[in-house]
Length: 352
Image (cartoon, helix red, strand yellow):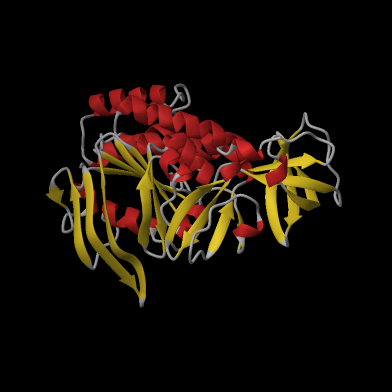
């Protein structure tokens, strides 16, 4: 492992921001720390950077314990969410800042800055000031400035938070391509699930100062291991009595069931269904246009369930009675989560 956190603890004024945190990151991977506000993800990032010191435990980078090594000597590049560019410096001087601090020779600085300007597709704009750039361009400059001293590890604290939605989408793809091209180990903090899914090789979910789960985006999305991961990751509806729906196996001591929109099929009463006998009747309470689909809020057995319906399908109105079939759901028992399949999917006897 290139980066390792071993039993890290950190407390602020009685609040434990890191609670026995341990994980490892392989070299060259792009990792997302994903969690709600206050979950401890930024504290982890700042401790790796050397901006905070753990109360106990070890931080290891490239085989070396760095707890007592100053931030400036850890070989780390840091990209802040608010760019943190020097507004009185040109793009060129902002990128060159770290190299000037290291007192590199002018020829090398000039070559490195122009190399990075080309990498971030801003060649020709080196004489501009931050105020003359768009938000996306400013973040690219911040990225280049962090890379200029050739760090071994890149840390990004919500790097797209200050950018509008369309540019944020473009920068996600750009960042992933750049990091893959450079092969630099990178860790970024985000609370945006879509961002983590799209950009990261692996995701580490944080909650109340501890690690809930670590894995690829697909692994975590399809197989959440904890109740929190199942609830937090993705858009969900929660119900207390999942056995009020047809054809699910009984599990003892279930606290709640969690249903994602893609687990649900909503049909009009006059539409033919493959799993008709296992469908439940519901009443549509809300219909919302989401661009590529309609989002439905349906009341089924006194449970409110979110579902989606394609724009090419016949429209459904508020107040309309519909048939609702649930393909699968997660159930939680204590802190654990497990996936249950509707038995109709494998039992031909209930097919129409």
